[in-house]
Image (tube, rainbow, N blue to C red; front, side, top):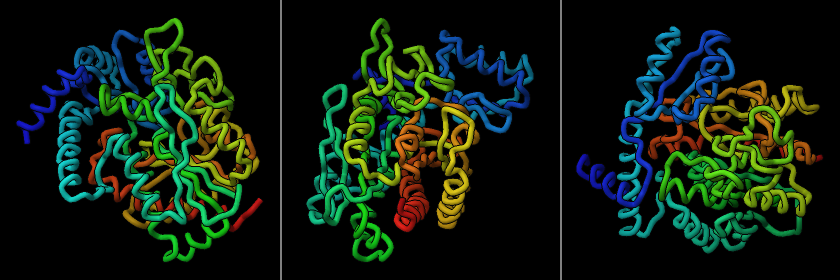
Length: 419
């Protein structure tokens, strides 16, 4: 396999694909406010080109940083000089990426020869869009594919609608892949869409839900970004829009919603991975969702799926004050996580965004909650940092199947508690 990886690396370099040879991911277990402040200062040093996978916010949470090869010695020496404990969790990021790419190539060959679709593999945007047509063809009375708009680079944005009839019935919204590098999110979305279609008619609870409610699934909430993670930069998180007056492209689509827009936890710097954009809903990918949800007017749940950290969160992110439905949302979340954990023993934490991770403004589930959609939740899927955004494909199906247990509980609660 080493020869295959080397060949892939050479092809990637020739295609202008960004390489991460020698880049390390280090984990810092901060022990004091001073150490948090040191890491926050590091975050602002653009010359080091650090990519914070988990940000420095509290002594209770680890900090994960992708450190380019050119900055490894500077960063590790600085941490050692200040007695900040750290460990290297990924020694060479490119090794993992080469392995991931080789697996994808091997899977593509298998899928072509067997004319099948492997739910335990990562796929390109084109393959996912093509598979959606297959799903609709297999379940024409239940599933339809709707174009909800176009992306910045003019890619279609498709939503799968699961419905047994009726117009603007009470509905559940679910999106995956708003941050393009979180590949297990999109893959979980694909598996889940197939599960819903396959189990309707045989799973009594799901069948009763779909007999009274609709489910909308946006599998690629950031299609331009996702395509870019396959063609140019596996670590790309944002949209691909051009920013006026800056050479840096893209906006963090989960800091772009009209919910505390431009507040703490979002950046004014276009080069930042958490850049909030020039104005709320400036990103067409966000605006497309806003338009569909508000025009529909009868969504009862809004669920957004991210990775990683193994969390189930509810509003708010833009403030640490409790929402009025906090006791119910917390109770639903804890019961959902209990179901999720029952499958493989995967542990999750539950809480509001602001209290469980950090204050983050302009997020989608804060917007949906403020719109009146009470059951607004965000998942952070596997893992807790061993692989981070490069979760091996052999964990897709276990991740998706355990997540389904939690999702299903939330959906059942929504069905049984109309408002």
